[in-house]
Image 1 (spheres, rainbow, N blue to C red):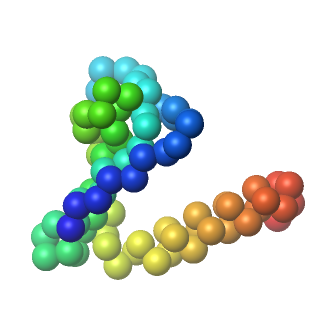
Image 2: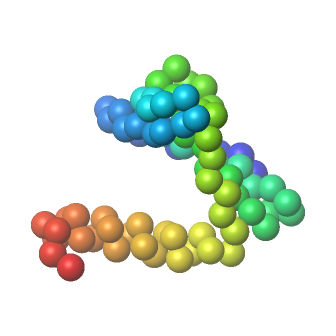
Length: 80
């Protein structure tokens, strides 16, 4: 599986081997029989950045849960 997600109207950043770069989204790639997922940044030039995070696919539900908690906390005004 390969999927890209781009942010709308927001530019974030990532740090790669050659410094800081503008980031407009992420590229997600499952490999190794879907046992691992790699996350790459997408640069403001719509290129895949030269850095990545590899995570065990089985840990994605925990990551999603944590991200949802961050969103809820932000919507609640930062209260835990």
